Length: 313
Image (cartoon, rainbow, N blue to C red; front, side):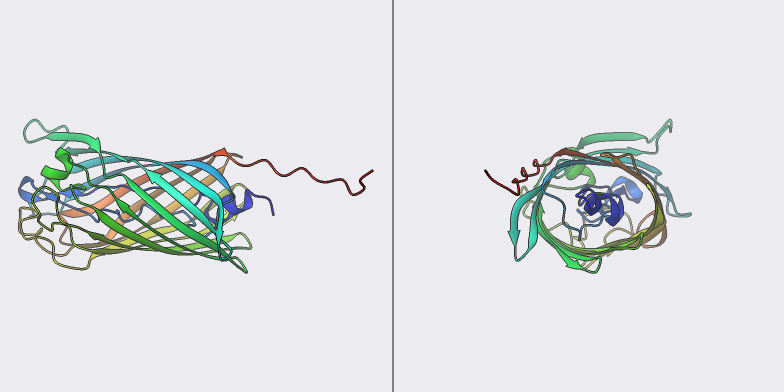
């Protein structure tokens, strides 16, 4: 098995993409936040599979639209996120597992009632940056397991302060993931727990703890992969009552989405595309439709050690 098999086969995607994400505006013009680590950001990535030693660039971008449910009076929302990630698979190992480090500095753009003559607005700014450290183990038989811990750093922006998209608080993150890859089939299940601290300006605890799952099942056909993708998220506690305006948004929120994924391996560069749609939601203003793209580029891998001659004169 070549070094690229560890990257291409598990999900035709590299170990870790993306953090960042999007939350949407609530009825009455205030905001309703998704988890700080947004649901769906690890879909299509076999995080449990250890990477070959090296440095990788992963860029994940998503565009989504939320049309309001009938009778809510909520605005239509368009949003886009660009998530550049640098992943370093270090030469270090712990109990046979590869130590990996990720750095993420995402950017977010949000439009409210786009193209409307009255009541439209837009924002664009950096989202909470994040750093994560994890260990990934090859368990044999096609199975892998990894666990990552890290944090989203606070940002003091209009998106965070006015719209509750990210915010001026620290968020602890733990990500436990299982991966399976064998006989042209791949499956992943990535479980995320996040816990946010108090707002650094007001001292108020705004964002509730959240739990998420992202999952993928794909079949590989030579350089192609095709399969099912999905995600779900739920608040674990009640949000701050004044986090948002509108009757739906002082309450616990949850959502579940399904969709399809297509990927192609061009050689050193790998691409993925997937489309998801909410099939269930609670206390959001509408159902999300999200289109995701991903490109993975290896930046550096160590040279293979020179082979010693069998006979030394």
